[in-house]
Length: 133
Image (cartoon, rainbow, N blue to C red; front, top):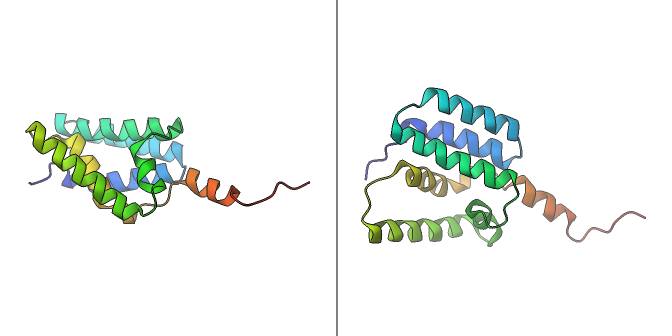
């Protein structure tokens, strides 16, 4: 299936890198630039998906799918599992291509290019360390 978002891929990765690194203002600016630049309905679906990721991550939603990719052991393996489940679900729905899900597919397929979420790095640093007295 030909993706409708190939022209947006660099912007998506840039946004995700900013977001997962904890640079929220930069991620927000990236989204604002995308909103101004990408006006077609299918492009708006991608921006909608990314806006949801931003909101979930900023609110520290521990049930957010993107965090599960990184907290369940092997992120590339988990990303493949989620991608396969998404593909199966969409196949069962027999729905038409939706750029919202194309954005997720692209993120999951490129998980190795993304940093470990800064929130998880901070937790790892905190594990096993004693409080100074």
